Image 1 (spheres, helix red, strand yellow):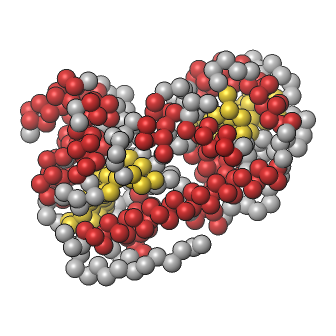
Image 2 (cartoon, rainbow, N blue to C red):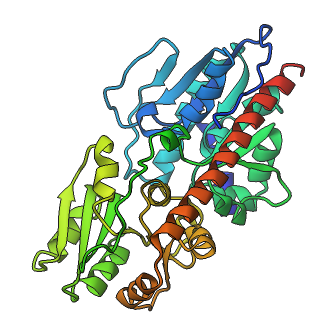
Image 3 (cartoon, rainbow, N blue to C red):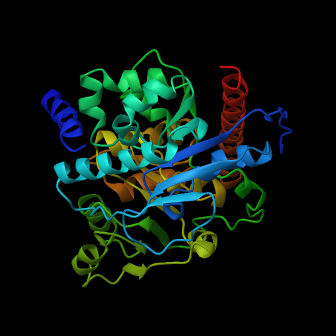
Length: 388
């Protein structure tokens, strides 16, 4: 791992309730630059920051990377690096691509901005010397996943340096504290838009209202083994059905595997606007992921679906979700060798829908408070940085 980071360094050298937010006076500010190693259409979390900036009349540019060569909307404040980086490329090729993106960022940032928001550790690493020279304590580092670079950067101490150089580090899951450097102050920023709470349906049909128990896996369909396990557990019981709504790398393989089963269904891609109606047609949301550091510590969109649409979850005991599910009785927690149907039947036996709705709303309020704290911290960062 240490050799890996050393190689990267060589590579770099070789390749040349609706709350009232307090308003601040930002007249002396220049712009903020947001460094995003992807496009906005797949990065909804950028909005959590720009909402704060817009509310305080702060101008900003977004320096993003169109790595998949998709046609994207070009706005005046979006600076786009049009360079294809294949998802299946070898790690060394991806490192080269990140280096090129880093050079593009440095070229366009120069002295145009007073502050930055850097949206992943890899991007921060490839502009580290630039950050150290021009933006010490003047940038926010936002961490939304456990990238392959995390482990070698942590072993060499570089991750702590990148975090230590930032004025504020935001994370999308409490679970990330398991692998992040200790004794650092992190601010939680959920992958959840507070405005959705206002659109939350008020009349929910109770799950388990018929003799049949319907389970849905909604979103990106990955993880063949984990979904196969759910299929194997439930397909032999005529009172159960399993549906997959969405698409992903294992969709076709799972569909082929289930081709002879009459209670497993594949409905393909869906319109995001139809998500609420889709989810509320089922009794349980499947959130069984592989037992690894990345999946166990990340918060899934399906967790927020549970709270919004009042549908219980099925989760791994080793995941960060199980902490919420166990504490607030939000669903079924399973281990590797458990009979999933038996665990569900046990949960259904004592299920009280009214109490479940109260629990969902309680956790939503906790999340709302955490998001408000995040927004206040971003505003405080700007206020403090203005005087540096």
